[in-house]
Amino acid sequence: MAIVRDRKALLRKLLKEARLEAGLTQVEVAAKLRVPQSYIAKVEQGERKISFIEVLDLCKALGTDAKDLIKLLG
Image (cartoon, rainbow, N blue to C red; front, side):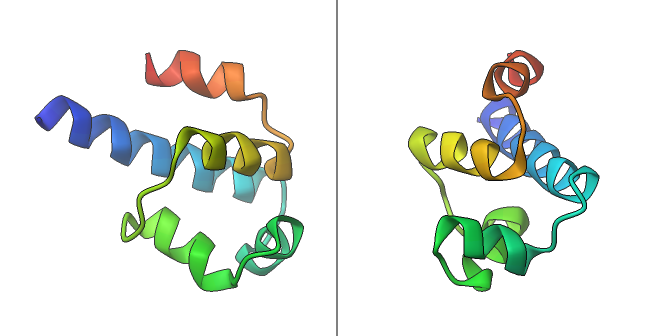
């Protein structure tokens, strides 16, 4: 289970880095997704599990290519 935990942590890190590189705040990303800012905070902190579809939506909101993200997680 350590591998799964490590990959989840890596996913959170990559999503947060993508947000910061895009120059977006949690509030701005949340607005794009029409969710509360706390949703983004909880995802980044590992307090909320997200589905694959939610990852795709986050990538789109961040302007990140989901394929690149998947390669880094592979």
